[in-house]
Image (cartoon, rainbow, N blue to C red; front, top):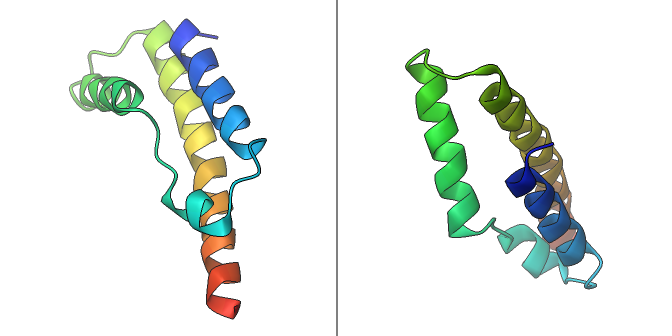
Length: 82
């Protein structure tokens, strides 16, 4: 796993274990550095210039993003029920 990918996983795990409120979960965003890296990888992918390591890194991000979206959607749904 790429070093930055490990940092992102750690960042998300740290956030979740900090006992965030539903509002904080719904508003969670990755760091600007991570967002820029993901954008760069997506651009390489669109241009057909992504190498195998970068593709694996992008896949890791996409899996984590899916988990984050699920978590945020559930937090938003619970907020709407209140």
